[in-house]
Amino acid sequence: MEKLEIFISPRKTIILLLGSIGFVALGLFFLLNPEQFIGWRIQSEFWIQVIGAASVLFFGFALIIGIKNLFRREPGLVFDSNGIAINMGGGFKGLLEWRQISGFSEVTVQGQHLIMIHLENPEAFIQSQKSSFHRKIMQFSLTNYGSPISLTATGMQTSYPELLDAVEKYFGRYK
Image (cartoon, rainbow, N blue to C red; front, side):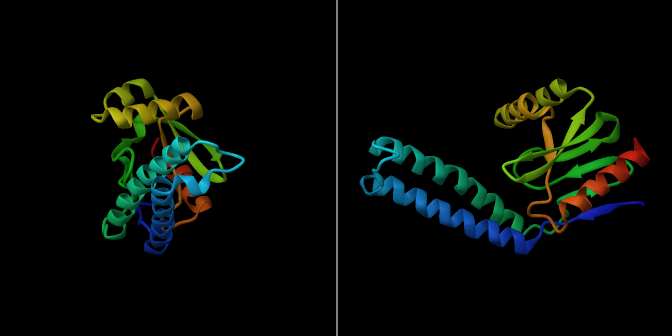
């Protein structure tokens, strides 16, 4: 067990890209034609436009990350004797050394299985991040899920059980 590299799945990325394109288009339609969506749930054109803008921003960001991931040739995750190298796009990128990690837990959020990486000193880790945006996201995750960093098999060339097995094996061996 020297090194395990897990790459981003082009097939899963294309599916995510298509979904993002659909939500960006729907968001634009909400922004440009809010009057068509006034109904029993939402009575205000303003709130329909807010929903449209949020959809365009969130899924537009996901679209950009998806396009970058589609052409990425390096692995998204690398497990080795040093730790876990994370390079999946979006949040934290870099090496989490085994000495920084205190353990793991599993969480399911809206049907999405996540492996929460518990750190020895999560507050210091969050403060060491350069981006204030990433610090805020990590603080939210720490407050709500007990850890600032999580792993998921979504978009990867692996399944959730295989990812969990890799985390447990490497942590058990190198911690």
